[in-house]
Amino acid sequence: MSSVTKKQTESDNFLAECADETKESRESRFFHPYLQLFISVVLTAVSQILLKIGVDTQFVSPWYTTSNLFAFWIWFGILAIIGSLFSWLFALKSVPLIIAFNLAATNHIMVAIGSWLFLGETISSQRRIGILLVALGVFFVGRSAARVEERL
Amino acid sequence: MTLFFFCLVVFSVACSVTGQIFFKHAMSDQSMSTRTRRRLDLAGGVLAMTVGFFTWLALLRRFDLSYLYPFEGLDRVLLAFAAWLILKEKMTRDLWVVVILICIGTAFVAAS
Image (cartoon, rainbow over all chains, first blue to last red; front, side, top):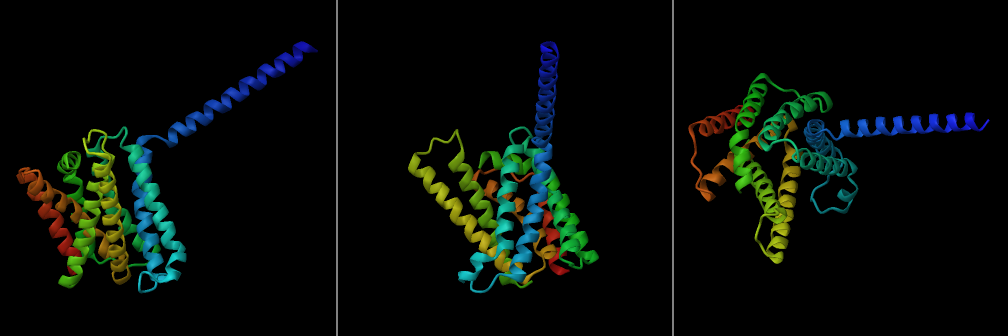
């Protein structure tokens, strides 16, 4: 009888260890620097969309009006900015600044797609070309910008 | 976009760049600054970021996001000019090319 109980305990321990390992592996996957960088870029785009929804639907002039304190879309936008900042700082622990700067160029594309999808904005072909040129410029300026950012 | 709004956009982007530089100075481990200086840097960063944020909100109210956001790309141009002015870094040919690329892109968006 005691042998059965012992086996049961061993099996329970083994299962608990497996569960811990799976959890750790899931956590390590979540904290992967490139995933965090991606999350940061997405959150930046999300924050801009939330801020735009907030100013269009809830924000009143002048800016110091009390009701603006309850503009929750803007607060969500601010939270997204803070989240993106934390992910960015976390990612920069392992990802070189130059790569992070290059990947951040995709922000411009994501914001454009988000504005079209969620805000129903019409993006003319001229604007599309402009956005693409800016994104390309921001991508290629990464090396110099990273060097300057480190020195300034 | 009128000249006034363009100046406001550049002002907002410049505030954000200034805020980042202040924060970096305040948080840097290698910095030899005193505690008071760090606090001043932090306060300067918060102030610059806040002013930039509210200016950006005011601009967002007036313009489409897809129209306004590409102007954020100008922060790299401002950073390059700041490096040229403050750090006396050389503006290389490659850097000029990307700065011009961003400016042309922004002009395309502004005209759309």
